[in-house]
Image (tube, rainbow, N blue to C red):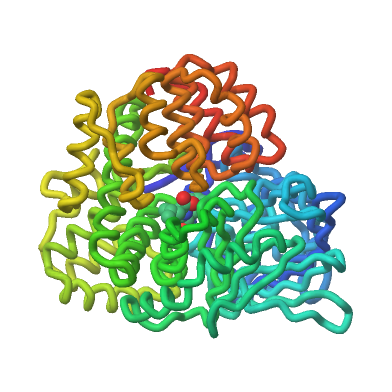
Length: 592
Ligand code: BES
Ligand code: ZN
């Protein structure tokens, strides 16, 4: 199948690509290692330095790299200067940096500095819980190219090393072995295992850290470190449990960092340094599922990697499955079942709204010309999870555990596509399940696994009898149970919403997930007096998933101007992808 770049382009011929979101052409050569030398300039808000790419083999002719708003100063090989052009540009894919190799070379030294990097968030002290500025990266799916010129496709796995100059009072962490301070004061990092470029990661700020076990350490701003260490105290046990399920941990250490609130995600599986939102620090360990999820990516995602964003479900569907296996092993079947049931509730809502908008709910489809951020949804997560579970149920737990082990063993340190998965299933398991409706069909196929329990049936019934005056007893409910119960409720009016808060204590909850649901219920019900709370929440939380429901409710309540003003007021502290998705919801019909 041929794919062509859409958008601005000054060369006459269309460009053939295997990854719809990258200019990389692996027939020209493949990166083996990237050596980064960066001065992290917190004032100018840029990285200045050198990226040295080493290829697997020496070659001549063009080498196409991805870049996004990079200012290239020079390109050299071992002998001298090398010609380069950046004359092809696309709104989604970025700018093609074509290096013209006239003599055989396997080394390219590119001197450059970053521009308005979509992969970096530069925060002022006021946007942290401390007194110094902070910078953090988010490279998945296609932002690594805004940090350095790279073959930014997961198919081009690379090792990396980095030498950083950072302000003396600040600490740097990367998705690599722990940094080592050199005699010259610079910090050196090594990632000796080949990773997809989207796992390149960096954070610099005032950081403290605590060991939680022999292989695990938490980093956070000083004001947060104690609470973070308490919240995630189970992590070493989690790591051991995951190893029992999925085989030896391949990355030596599992350290993680709790970031300032602007971080747009729940978590990001940067190898050896998972990134987490501070909204997980709820004081009751109720949201550690996200940590289990990022840990599970150490096998599904970081070892076995999606070949490009069209196969994203291979990362996330498998990881949601693995996450729930960890939860089951650590906390019991009921907790895992409840997580799956809540996931199904969300999936059904997402499928309905995507169908209404004419968007695909297949697990894999062509994304040529589409921005990966716009394609992001719960579908690859929850429908992917259901597919993996359907396979497990088709062959039984024991046979499936053996399949998981051979899947990971066979494809470790490889980037694979959906067809490779399909062939592997056929080979190892035979025709146990018709994968087509799962992969290419819309919605959830008939016969999909169902998750229920006595407790879930009770909660579902209780929610169904809201209008008859049935009310839940808050002190007997876990956070997941509350979220599940809330997801079963009909849309409520203002008086009912007040009663709901009385029953569940949502308004003053320390749990940001519950507060997000509360504020979105309140907004949808036109509850007077909650605008300040909404302003405060949107002004302090950066996690997209918690902000979207509030904006959607404001749209449903015909309060687009208020929602729009909220987004504007927080442009500076929110991530570009967050602003992008909130703004998209602002533009949708109010039936949402
Ligand atoms: N890898 C994802 C985050 C991501 C996805 C970043 C797509 C950029 C593009 C991460 O593992 C993730 O899924 N995070 C979830 C956690 C949840 C599913 C437990 C999140 O942030 O909400
Ligand atoms: Zn994930």
